[in-house]
Image (cartoon, rainbow, N blue to C red; front, top):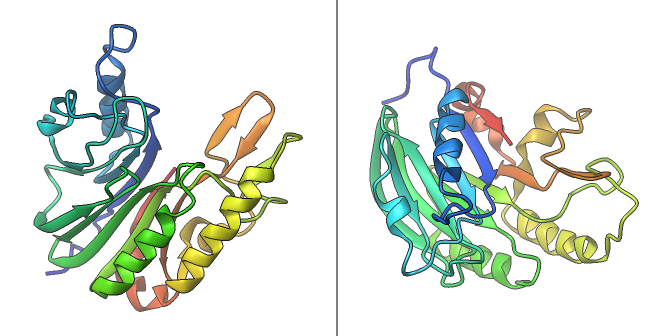
Length: 234
């Protein structure tokens, strides 16, 4: 079953830098959820959840959302995929990285088979994308593959980054990301749809970067009738 022609599925990627409850940030996750409602999000990729074995309850039962997430460490990494309850959704199965770097959700959205992959590419974990590539290659993904998240690097340092700071670690991560996307024939969707737009997703002081991206297979035209209605908000 395909969605109605007027339907717009809205994907959002958000690095929250921690959503677990603390006295200093007791309302933070609720503010995130409120903003997702304002954004009219259907599918949300959340990074840096900082969810450990003693704090996973915050993601277990979220009013209005179905949630799938990793449990790793209360102060580092962690990813989650949220699906709005109103979205017609069928869960097939999901799998996750042992280090909290990614989660893979196999599902149907409005009858269409999807493989949703949410990634947090921690700068110190140089092998996570290799593990993910091997995993995705082994399972031979079916349906529509969407890989998104915070990759902690830019694809084009002359266009996707504006800063006078050190870019050494970004250069290293960029080559790893390029190998990952090339090996799976993935294309940066924002760059494809907005080739002349900067679209920075992270700003700090005088530094601006587009670190958060969604990737899809290079044969994206095969899905044009479906994906032209999908909005990626970073």
